[in-house]
Length: 331
Ligand SMILES: NC(=O)c1ccc[n+]([C@@H]2O[C@H](COP(=O)([O-])OP(=O)(O)OC[C@H]3O[C@@H](n4cnc5c(N)ncnc54)[C@H](OP(=O)(O)O)[C@@H]3O)[C@@H](O)[C@H]2O)c1
Image 1 (tube, rainbow, N blue to C red):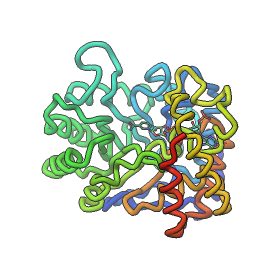
Image 2: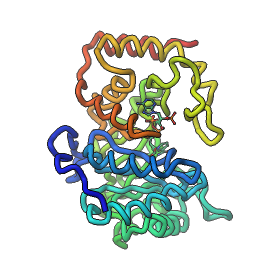
Image 3: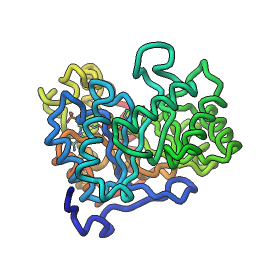
Image 4: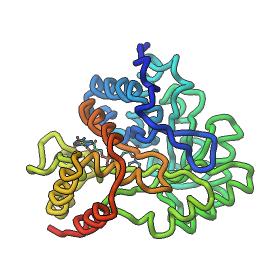
């Protein structure tokens, strides 16, 4: 059992309404894609979870396949949740997802009713929870009728295995259709989880309009472009960084391609009196569609640094233009 900081809700972490729903999420949420698997230092993983809670981060985001190996992030953190956070379950929003490859055979991925509902049961067992707060369809499935995938999400709510549902990586038109199908089944689509950062702005091309119009929240993942939009790679590729690790999803070529832009963005951030990580997160949070920025952290120090972005969230028009120009620089 933990003894959390009694001041964790003192106003330093803002809670923002998720679309038109009744649920508020912290401006910064913590993701468990990397840093919580069997390959990681679980003592640090546990410290990150404790510190996050003390900092007012009430939302932890999982998926069935996070690790490596797949499933290990849910299993490792399930033990920590049970041991340390059991008394605080009602203060936490815990999400999971299904859709990417998780087990052998025709039902281990994508968007069938069979995959989603079986995967949710597996996630609950690994997390040692009776329910999650948000369950997502992790990616659109071109071969399964959208009615079936959304029907499975609605069933998960009716079964009491999740309180809310969401979609992730759905393009604008498909997201609009999915949101409407869920509504016709009497279930609100709470949230969309897309990739969004200074380098990857696809959601601005239609998706954010859909989400605002339909009152659905938005929680962008990889807001720091997996660490590129921090000081991590300014002097090369550190051996303990995501880009250097075999199981890390950040390609070294992406670092090489973007490093000139990153250095220019770092300059702009310094002129604003903040770090590049702070500026990248503030930039996400400036968008009216965005509820929360979903970060990753491999250490308590990174987590603490990232939360400090909340000290300076405003941008001038000139700063935003300078960021646009810097983001377009090719190395
Ligand atoms: N729905 C989806 O399809 C999907 C896909 C991807 C992610 N997600 C979710 O989004 C979450 C966040 O994604 P992400 O991990 O790519 O986010 P991110 O915040 O863009 O990148 C996190 C990584 O950047 C580095 N970093 C973070 N803060 C730093 C700092 N202050 N200084 C230096 N380096 C720093 C760390 O990598 P090092 O290891 O180099 O220290 C950290 O693990 C995931 O955990 C997951 O929950 C969802």
